[in-house]
Image (cartoon, rainbow, N blue to C red; front, side, top):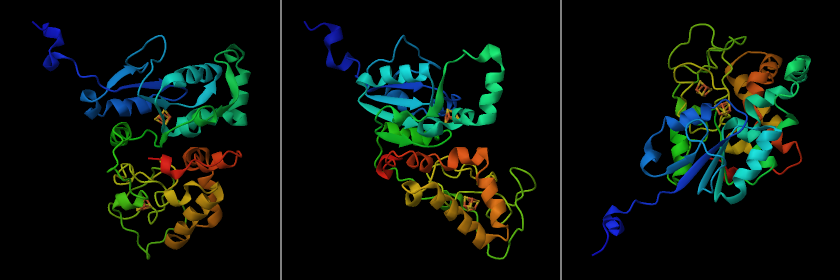
Length: 296
Ligand code: SF4
Ligand code: SF4
C-alpha cells in the first residue's frame, strides 16, 4: 500500500521561494510588502530579517533587495546574497539610488557624523552611498518610497497585464486650470488644499506630471504634492537630470506665475532631489542608464 505521505493529494505544493535582503534603508519597503497578502498562498518567504531570519540568505527564485549600499557590511551581505538567486529585484529608492542613506553623502551630515568621536567606527561607512546595481546585476527595478503593495504583487507575480500609467497626473484626477495662477510656492503641506483642483494651481510643488505612475496617486488625491518617489516617467528615464528639471519647469511656466528660480531652487532641495534624480543622477556617473524596459 502506498504510504499516506506519498499520496499526491497530501504532498505539499512546492511554492516558489523569495527572500528580502535589507541593506541601509528604513524598513518601510518591507512594511509595504507585508501589507499585501496575495503572495502568502503563492510564495514562500524564506528570509527577511524583519520577520524571518537565518544565518545567511538561502538560494531563492526571487531576491528582493531594499536599501542602499552604505557600509562594508551592506556590500558583504549583498555579494553573498546574490550568488545563487535566480531573479534580482531592486526595491525602492534606497536600492535604486541610495535614498535616505544617500543624504549622508552631504558634507554637513558627514561633518556632524565625524564630529561624534564615539560613532566613528560604527558602522564602517563606505566613502559614499551606492545603488545596488553598482555591484550586482539587477533584473527589475521597482521604484517607490516605498512601492505600494500592489506594485510589489505585480513584480512578484510577473504580471504582464499590470501596466503603470505613464505619469502620476494620469492617476490623480485633479483638474489643471489655466486661469488660476499662483505667484509663489505655498510650501510643503501648509495651507488649505482645495479638492479636485491641481495642486500646482494652488501653489504646491507637485512633480506628478513628470513622475512615473503606478502608485494610483496615493499622495496627490488627498492633497499631498507628489515628490517623485517613483522616479521619472518613461519619456525622461533615460535622459539626464536637466531634462527632468526642464520638463517640470515647463509645466509650472504654463500653470503658474511663479518665478523660474523659485521653482528651480525648491526642486534642488535635498527632500526632492532625493527622489527626482534617482535615475538621471546615475547616468552622470558614466554608467549606462538603466533601460526603461527593466523598470516597473
Ligand atoms: S525606499 Fe523609502 S520606504 Fe524603502 S527603505 Fe528606502 S526610505 Fe524606506
Ligand atoms: S496635483 Fe500633481 S499629480 Fe495631480 S494633476 Fe496636478 S500635477 Fe498632476
